[in-house]
Length: 361
Image (cartoon, rainbow, N blue to C red):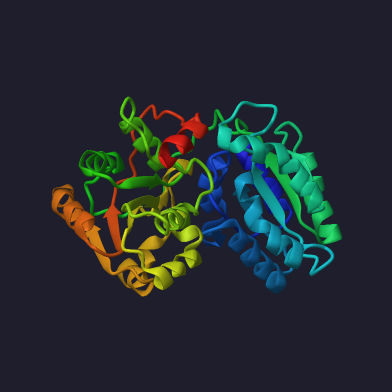
């Protein structure tokens, strides 16, 4: 099935792809580099992917492919309505969208509403779409032809289990000079925090924190959705709190809405403690690289207004560096190099109302 999809793309002269890795499309996105080599660009957010794809079209005149999870539809509404739409510049784009929260299937609570309105959003955007059927690839071929002919975006929705039984080895090579597992670091934070409040980003970070804290008093906040917004949510909370706020974020989330972090330079809250758990990849959706290794994190965060930057690369450094981090009397940023590794059998966080209630006490 995967090979047939790529043959259809090749037949239609689609030579460039861009997007944000997604769990539904994990198998597809792992295979992208084999077919597109250096013409597969992973962007920080979905809006960026649309913009770069439009740029490629303006130069080549060829339809690009943009892949994303339906949670990222909000990020593409503006570049669609004011750039690519047929009433503006009329740019043909092909969207592959992982459909979390599909009403015909059970899914996690944070995906249900987005899944319910996904088709409505596409209709409002006037994007012709199909639900992928592996038994009928002619529909995909016809959809692409329609988008090209009418010079407008078209979309394919992929249900959660589309690629369920297909296994592809992850060939992404990640450079790592650390021996730290994320769970080991989180466990140390839990055991040594005092009155600090913890806000954890979406994905494995929240789920590992939740599992490590099971059967204990839980006043943590878990960002089960809204990837890329944990830093600003934590910052907003810190503005009206006297307690130290610990934001546990990942490199993919950190990069997604990086511009928002400029707000720190204005307020410089002393109680804001930011932890970047950096494994240089989108771990939970296939291990694709984020390319954060190309950024000088220390210089960046200092320019954003953080008074202190600390770095942990080895397990033996954790006790002293975390103690120093906690004791800083001004805004602090701690980067922790971690392995691409997670706890097995991670539970899902389901009772979100209780999470909110306990956190706000």
